[in-house]
Structure formats: structure tokens, C-alpha cells
Length: 474
Ligand code: BES
Ligand code: MG
Ligand code: ZN
View (cartoon, rainbow, N blue to C red):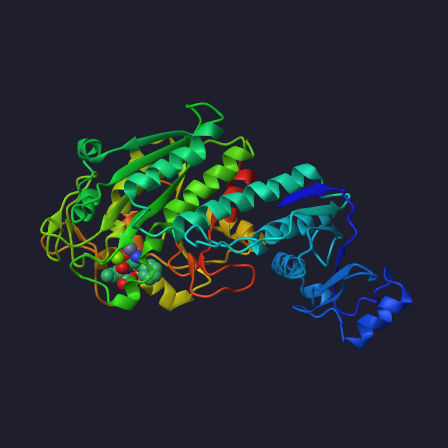
């Protein structure tokens, strides 16, 4: 799908808020709108399409003072679906400011959601679904071609992440994930370095290696460097959990809980997707992506409940539960980010705990931080991107609970607050750096479609990461 600024096609798409008197329509069409009961309510629309028609699609946004960027995305998503259902190849969106949302933002959110309306993961279908929409004209003063292209690049990053999550683990495993990072990013000037098992051993990443040991597929450690400001300037470092499959290991998951565990690399996918958008747009900020990727499997070599393993930091870790594997891989990845990368801040993104889903449901990211201001900046951005972030606590009680009996700390503890104990465990490896942890166990995956999100990987939080870096560029 392509977007061309100012291009006028026959079919026009309008958004209207509730109670809008539709002055832009002639009396005949106004009467028609009345007849079909269209009042501009959210999630309603009316169309006048076909030969001898007004060639119109009008989408309701709901009450004017309640319009958010999400209202716009939902409206554009609906318009895209209507175009597709009517097999219309080209149409023009008339862009105006709506409620509190600026004209530029209305245009950008629309471009994003038109692209979402055409997204489907059909790499594995012998007959992929046909898509009809080819070109959308954007009629706007404020949303120029550059703004349009930015929205396209961000959404492409989101779709890259969705695809990576959706590819099953039979095809997407550490080696192929690392290759995908290289293929996606290297042409954009991102340096991608891939460490194999031997090199990971040399780095001393014993916690990460313990998790990887049970699989026939060797782990990879991926470092992605986007350094437009040169090597000496500090970077925002993004660390993504990269379990290409999480069976639970010997603490094996029940079958139902395993169904979607190819998605346990969604954090890594979001780092790769965000770096794509950041590099494609040429943002002027150093950003480094870090992924320790492996599979959590069962075999004669696999680690077991009760094992005590080392780590790159040197801390010994009691394995209370092999299914709390993400924090072991992240322990070494975060420690690497804190000690081997010139990081000004570290943001880790991880499908880390079922407890976070219990606390916040499937649509909200749980966050913990060592730097309140950094988290609030991210939350501020997230309000516009529609990727909700809610803070969870870490305090000395949680730090106390994770202390080990026979080793220094343990990876799984009883007593509730599982999202916070996991975060307290990660904090141990941050070396006092400015740090935000984003637990995306809920929103990374959609069991069924909602709003402009398709079933499967959601690409969360690519948009927020991109916009956060953009706000902090030099
Ligand atoms: N990958 C899971 C967390 C998860 C659960 C993500 C559901 C998405 C949906 C993680 O590795 C895990 O298994 N966590 C355990 C930790 C527990 C054993 C302390 C959990 O949450 O049950
Ligand atoms: Mg697990
Ligand atoms: Zn996991």
C-alpha cells in the first residue's frame, strides 16, 4: 500500500465526530446519512459507493472531547476494511484536526492503521488472502509526505516485529533470528555482531548458557549498534528477551500454556523492529540493541530445578524453577549492556511473567524502574502511541525475597508479586544504571483480533521505543 500526499482520487474518506452537521455533504447525501441513522458515533460508518454514487466513506469518531489517537487509528482501520471489502484500489483521506488531536497526528495515525488493516501473517498459507487497496491519497496541509513516510517506517518496524513473533519456532530459532536481525538492519547502517556458543562461553554468560543447554539449537548473542553520533557518545540500550521457544524446561508448562510460547522472543522482535524504524528515519541518537537468544527445552543436558548456576557478573543463581528462564538470559544480557556498552540508560523488553498478566491483563505493559523520570517519559510517549504502560513496584522486601539459600540469589520464589520479584532479580544485574523494565507478557500476543491489532504478535512496543528515541535525539 502506498500513500501520496495531496493526491485526489474519486473515492473520499471523511472522519466526523458525534453531532457533526455534515456541512461538507450536499442535502441529498445528508438526508441519506440521516436515513441510515448515522450520527458520528464511534465504531459506526456510512458509505455511498458504486456507480452514480457520491463515492463516499464517512467514519464516526464519537464525542469530540473524547477523541484520542486510538479513535483515529480505529477509524482508519475501519476505512481500510471497507475499501478492501468493496475492492476499491484507490481513495483519498481528507485529513483535519479532530478534537485535541492535531492534523499531522490524525494523518500519521491514519497511515499507520491503513497499513494495519492490510496486515495479515500468511507466509504459511498456500493461498494468501488477496489485498485490493493499492494507493491512499492524503489530503492535508500539515501531514506532508515526510510525516507520511515516517508513519510508514514506524509501522513497518511494528510489522517486522509481528512477523518475527508469528514465525513458528521450527523456522525461527536463535541462528535464524540472528540472521533476520542482520538482514533487516545491516543495509540501514546498523552494525550487527553475532556471537556463537563458543564466544558466549568466552564472555562468561553462564546463566544464559544454562538455559540454552537443553536445546539442540545453539544460542546466539546479538549486538546491534546504531551509532550516528559516533562511538564516544552514550547510547540508549534496548535489551530484548529472545526465547524462540519456552517449553518451561523440566518445570514443563501445561500444553495450553505452551501453545503460544513461540512468542517468547517478542521483546527481541520489538528491539529489531524499533531499530529498523529508528535507522530508516535516521534519528540522531545512538541506540544499541542486545539480544541473548536461545530455546528453553528438555534433554539429558538440560538444566534442572535445584541447580545452581553462575553468571557473567559472578553472582551464583539457584534455579528454583526452570520455567523462570527469561530472567537468567536477561541477567547476562543486561549485565553486558551495563558493563560493555556505553549505555546512558537501559530499557529491557520481555515477555517475562504470567504474574504480570494476572496483575494487568493482556493489554497493559507492566513497568519497573530505577529512574522515575525515565519511566514517566516513556509513559508520556505511550499515551500517544496507544501502548499502555503501568508501573509496578520493586522495594527492599522484593530484594529480600530473592536472596538464595545455597547460592546468592534465586530465580523463582513463592509468595505472590511475581512480576516484581522477577524485576528485582533483573535489577541485581543493572549495576546501578538508569533502567526501565517493560514486562510485555500480556500485550505481546493477541489471542484474537481487537481494534487495529490482528491475531498473533502485536509488535508492542515498537512505536513507543521509536518515539522515545526520537524525543531524546540530539
Ligand atoms: N515466558 C514466560 C512468561 C509468559 C507467560 C509470557 C504467559 C507470556 C504469556 C516465562 O518464562 C515464565 O514461564 N514465567 C513463569 C515464572 C514462574 C515459574 C516464576 C510464570 O510466569 O509462570
Ligand atoms: Mg518460562
Ligand atoms: Zn519465558
